[in-house]
Length: 350
Image 1: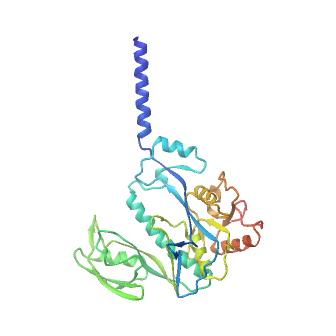
Image 2: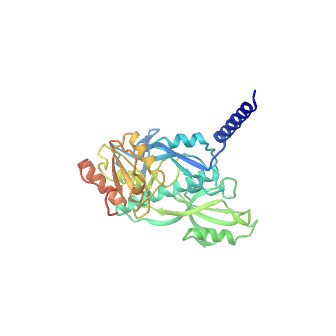
Image 3: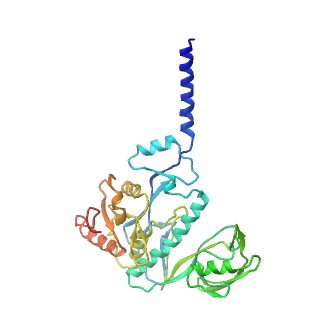
């Protein structure tokens, strides 16, 4: 074997090692793929997804689908083959990890954050639907999350309404934070909450976590509703992006007739209590998910219009949504005439 041949074989071996390393080394990127869609007007184990108590409910034909995205988790190892697979998939996307997750974010912290966002989003969706119906909705402060292993576990529950903490009446979430900060380690403080129709009083002793005292709850804005409305979404779906579709499903359930007229409607977008629709992530993947699920119409948040270029909606029509009210009007127009002009991302005015 000549020296040149030996050098060539060595180079091939080194190249193979480099390629092998490149294939298995995690890279600082994440991938997005279309996820499942969920019909919020459907039943789950024989129970309606939208539950109403204290007001007549109208359950009709048609579908209102929230859309989801499969996204790499914070601790998932994304390798070169994963990136190449997503790059060549027309319905997938690749993003730098730093544009989506904080440097120290973990799967567990991301799951908790998504769960909190879903609780808040559901309450806000109810508020938006009732506001559209002209109902009075009063803001409250409620428990959005209880952290396992911290003192509040077993004493407070998600959606407990926070009335008083350590003798201070709660009017905003910061009141709870301030009361805990004022406490002394080892000294219990009293929480007064409303749970359903009952008032509950419990003493909780804050625990030192790092330099701060913690009881282990996330307080946030909730609402006092004139009657009870809930949306039963699977625990593995989190985040605020289903706000608009939940609002429309609640509105449909509380009003006679069907806003879908038997059609399959999909969409996405956050929602505010007064009905403003906000942008979300993964818009192209959500449009693809709705298209593959057979949706007839997809509602696109106005602020996501710039991100839908190049997406293939198939036979599904796209309509721009700026508010809850405009979305209701769009559906009314479309079910009367599927060929009627609708608000479009091609419009120059927002």
